[in-house]
Image (cartoon, rainbow, N blue to C red; front, side):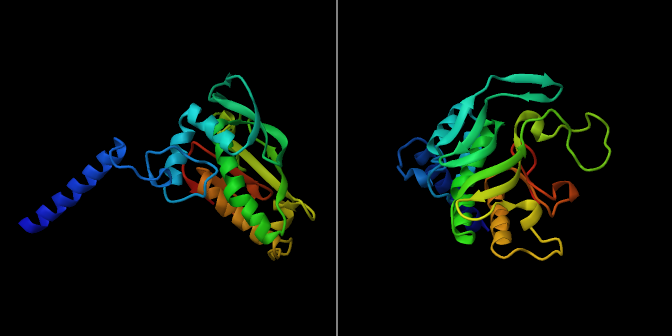
Length: 243
């Protein structure tokens, strides 16, 4: 019993010493594998990326630095209060990422824009090349900022619960435009009207959905409920959800 206790204390002691050595810089490790290191948004994600992404989204200076790493196209917008539970801080008007256009441009919080940029770089474009044979040149959306409550498809008391759209932390995605071929839409290509998945195009949408779950806090798609039959709802700041 005493031997087991000693072994446990030794393990915790060594772990604490290693943590202190890394945190103080006494023990140098590559930034990619340093949990206290800054996010390199353009680097290939690893097991520590989600920790660094969360930290970057919570700090405006880190967040805007990461947007530049991803070549996010945006213009600044002033902070705004538009009603109870509505408005935004550290937001921007986003028009694209690199050569990809966001149609139309939208107001997003920096953290939601960062999640979008990470999704585009590390999930969307790889999935498009694999399943569609060409990169995406545009993503079409149904809007982002709106001072409104959560839409469940059923009557709810006004002011019951604000949507993440009310703080510019959410965006609804309806279609993806590849460099070659017609646009991939949620309403037509998630499944056909007879319920059969579309070859190539449906797998792309499934991978796009799964990839969004890696970089956003909340992701809702057509399988969630009838309200989302034609779009992906992507948000930050709320409960973790991938539906």
